[in-house]
Image 1 (cartoon, rainbow, N blue to C red):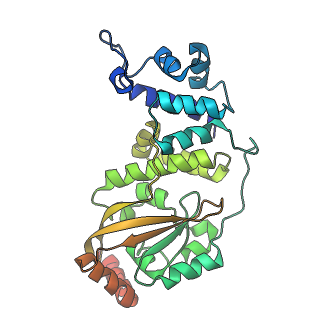
Image 2: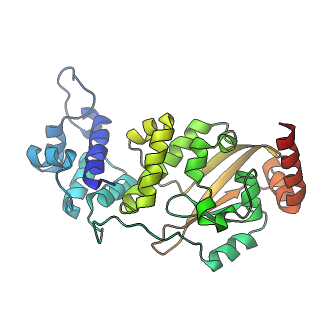
Length: 295
């Protein structure tokens, strides 16, 4: 990915989203375009207008930590957004060379962990949101129309973001699809800054931009969020409407691997449904197959 250009785009989007009142400035008269002016951001950040303009134009990389901190304060960035800006600046990148990595693999211990979680649907995600592994409950919850063993073959691996935008079965799983999609794009933006040299990640973004106008529109807004927990509503083809919480467990190494887990409130209908999912996976598989044949 072109990191200087991405950094410039991010700065422009955040500048446009702020009003003078948001940062304690007086607003004199009507503005032709929304947001702060470049000179206002430069003043708040304690740098020259020329230097800031070059940052927005993608003419500078490897900005110092002090510059990043100043910009974060001036633009009222969250901690997640500040980290994203730091990633885009190239401060911690060891090499600017774009590389093609070998297909990723979940560690055997990680696979054993999710398998042992039983009735807790769990999915192991790689740094490109590809599915590296899942337990049986996780498979039947989010992708019952796919082969259970699909993650074992790199060329056939499901990708959660791709499925959300391009796979109709996955899309129909989320009654509040737009909010789910927005969350996915914000998370992918964060990953794209952290793993800027990953050519497969860049290819995924390019593919989705070309094939999904909705993705292209959301991506252009440059949202950033570290989606570690929250709630999801799923309209499962066999279990019906499920209100679930989710937690994302990040591996402590630099692999970018995460375990996405789905949790139901104790005593709820969703909890009973997940118990059925764990105890009767083969019966559910037969029901789903019959539904497909009927269609």
